[in-house]
Image (cartoon, rainbow, N blue to C red; front, side, top):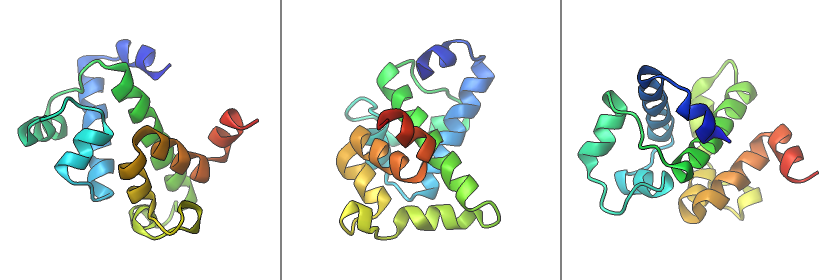
Length: 135
């Protein structure tokens, strides 16, 4: 599980991971509340806490959060390989309506369905993940 990998990371690596995840989610255009909900942060997490994750604070050690982080990384990586010469296209794809999600954008699917939404979007863009969960 990803949280086991996290436990073996240095403080600097954990901080960089939080920065990277926040940059990905910012590129997807999520609001502060949507970010907190998607990452399963405690209800009422202040905006300043989100700012700290962008700057110099690692995420809390929470297996639910890191399960979501793993899917965010998987989606981002699959989009990077899908659009290797046009990185802005990945963020655009996340915001475009998609037939697979009944006309909703992948971001809308993720915000609406949380973990299940992340898994659905990841299955759509990452065939190796889809093969693992749907043999």
